[in-house]
Image (cartoon, rainbow, N blue to C red; front, side, top):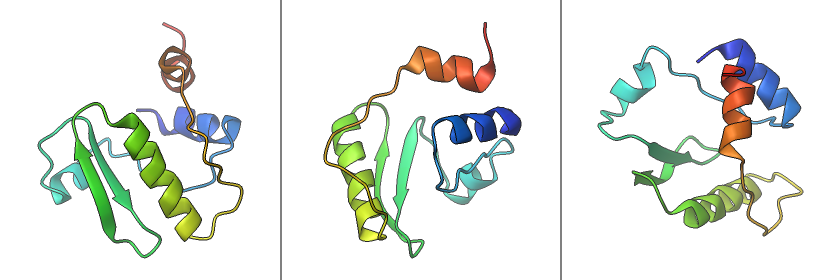
Length: 97
């Protein structure tokens, strides 16, 4: 993944939280991960609070994410679930195909 595209998308989407780009699979190997996709929810103290392997549970994952952001003192987090247009995001991150 091209880090310049991720930086641009983060600015465009107003994402201010850290984003890990693991092109060399360093994090993947450190977690002994064998699944794709794999979601690891890490709190503000660096503790893994939840994980999910495979697709699905998008609503539950969003709720956990919102809870951890509120717990960390991030303001403006509502209860509504966000949705992402995967086609638009892919074009943003990887360029037009």
